[in-house]
Image (tube, rainbow over all chains, first blue to last red; front, side, top):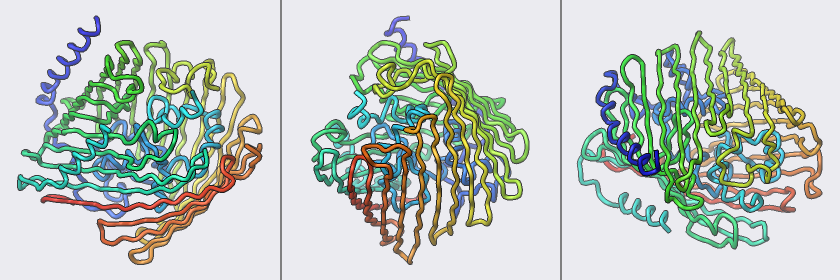
Length: 146
Length: 417
């Protein structure tokens, strides 16, 4: 299949895709916003199903990537998309920890002088670096890594 | 320039009065001014505007428009980031959502989060729950990440099929193919699972496979166990093959052999965090991770933290973590202590972050950053914050950074929260 045929196939596939939207399950969609204002996001206080797992307990920072990749609609019940972009950006000049010094409870990456620390963290395990800087948000990396 | 133009368009949309009675708009403007010294000893004060908004009920209840982006309005830096980028369009898309089956169709600049795909694209995304617990998502368009050369001949497409038994599991298989300049750039497949086999047991994970390199890239699995008498235990296992994982990069930081990354390396990381809630306001946790390499030696990461917080009043925390690599130059001790307190509409935060390196870097063994931030809520929608950070590290004998921010939340039309 040459590239032109590939492009045509993709376009046809995407245009045909609405068909499955009209054969979808009949249950109600997830709300666009959480129907009740909540003071703290401990979902298990009200939910006993899988929603309870979304409780923002102390280990939620580690877990959140798994939920976001599977059930992003649940995130958008309470968070605007820009909340994700505070840390997960395609191009970002300001470190998250510089933007939110008034929110010390937020687990923000790269506090302090991370320029030095990254040389150690990157040697120990470069895989987490790659997720955010391997193919995007690496304009600053070019200053040293040419 | 393009991004500034788009931000200007966005401002016009905000200022434009809502013509349809059901149309609603809400969003947030964040204006930042940062004063700092560059590595070539030049003082700069760039200004940034971050804007995001959502237009809902455009003609029909199910149609919305979402926008987010930033622009830098003062270019003083001689080199580095500022000379290459003066803004970014993070997302701008039209969304159609059905009231049943979680059916969604998005069109524009989007962030896709479906299995192996964690991509920003200019294109289309559709998903829906199908019958029998099945679900499907597809996407296609021009990838944003390959914008480092040109966008001509760049394509990305893929999808994910899921099966779900509510309350028991959700599992999915996903696929992604990316083409850069008419050449194959990436091709990956993935498996993911969210398993809830028992009460208080939550197992999540994913595996990804590099089709071009014919082998597994990484496995990442995690369990959340508890709470059992206020204890939560979160064991995790991670494995990566460097040759298959670090591919299709756009920076030499991850290129073989330019970088320090050995393509023959494989890493297995085993670890766990144990946390305990003393009360609703006080919790403590300890964490341990062991890195075991095929080629290199091993490394350990361990530490703990304590946090006390009262919603709407303030918080305080203390943490210390030790990175212990198999060479002295790969070891440090990181400590942090912070506290914040609200005084009516005002709030004050102090934060100290210290890293002690086992081996001196540029003759410096101890690096620290101490900051104080003061905020004031004029109304529920308007907030101003000023902070100053003083630090010493291997690159600056004395580093002072000042940051001012002004946040304005806006809402027009009915049905807004």
